[in-house]
Length: 210
Ligand SMILES: O=C(O)CCC(=O)C(=O)O
Image 1 (cartoon, rainbow, N blue to C red):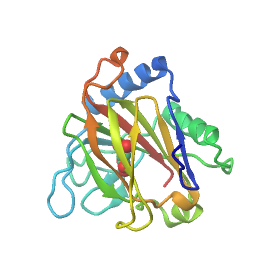
Image 2: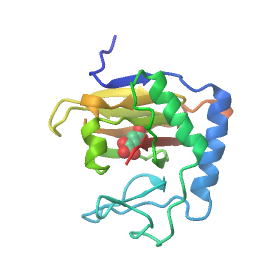
Image 3: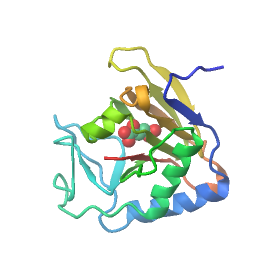
C-alpha cells in the first residue's frame, strides 16, 4: 500500500456521484460565466495548459501574488468564494483529520479546467500569507471528471516524485509539514470521467486560506 508522507491525506471517492454532478454544474457555470475562466500566461511568457478562474482572491501568474482584480487579464473584480464551497473544503479538512482552529476558513479557491492535453508543471503553493504557510494550513483539492496523473514530490524541486492517479470525487489534502511539497499534473487520462457527469476533461478545485 502506498504510504503518504505526514500531513497528506487522500480521501478516495470522497464525493458521491450526486455531489459531483452538482459541483460540475457549479464549476461549469462559473468558468463559462462572466469574468470566467481564461488561459493564464505566466512569468517568462509560457501559456498554462489549463483554463483557470479564482474565487475569493485572484492569483496573478505574472507576479505570483494574490489580488482583488485580474490585473494580468481583464481587470475584472474577483468573484467571492461562495459559502457552500468554503463549507465543503472545511468539511473535507475536518474529515481528513486536520485539527484546525475553529477560526480556520478557506478564502481562496482556484478552479482549473483540464482538457485532454491539460497539465500543470511541478510547483509549490507558496503565495499565501506567511502566517498561513508557517501554520501549515492545509490545501484542500477536489477532483472531478477525468482521472489525473498527479505528481507529488518533496520540499525541493529535485526530490523524487510519486505519481498518483486522482479520480473523480477524490479529495487530496496536504498541510502541516507537507504544506510546501512540490506537486503538479503530468497528464489527464481522457475518457475516464464517470459517465453520469457528462464531461470530457477535468475540473480541479483547490482551496486555501490566505
Ligand atoms: O489539478 C490538480 O490536481 C493540482 C492543481 C494545483 O496544483 C494548483 O491549483 O495549484
